[in-house]
Length: 241
Image (cartoon, helix red, strand yellow):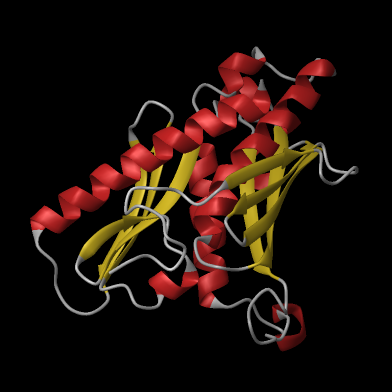
């Protein structure tokens, strides 16, 4: 069964990382995975939350949201509903955990960085696109702090590894990399893989949407995910060079 956009099973969608897309934040990136577009901004604040004061450690956290018309039909803003949905909380926490995996919080000093990831247009893989773009926005925010001599450690110590993420899944019995929405809704197995630039795992989220799946499919999906994250790490390096 051919993929909707004609890609090979192991091929990423076209990926773009546009730095400095927004002028006000200390770091900003518009990331594109095919038709998916996510604006990632990194905002620096001197000081840390009350529970962390005096520890000598910095803090990195994230918030994720989807614009009302990012999808085919309009969704109400969660601020109007009066509560944040469980899916939004889960994705925000995933992005925060993933980005903290690449930061030495002691070298960051008692500074806080908030990563806001807003989905402008959704076509599958919004959380993995957010992680991939937020890493670059975070890097630029740390560079901003370094230029103002506000770090405890050197910039390369603070950002001691890179992090990227990609979706994988089984569609029509075939393991595929970087699912678009049409594939995502039809997937028998759906998985998100977060890796460092050296191929170590930060997090793996996976489920059998249509039942159970064998170890052989899990191994095939992990191999696809690691290879995809390696490609994304190279794209990140080129964007930052």
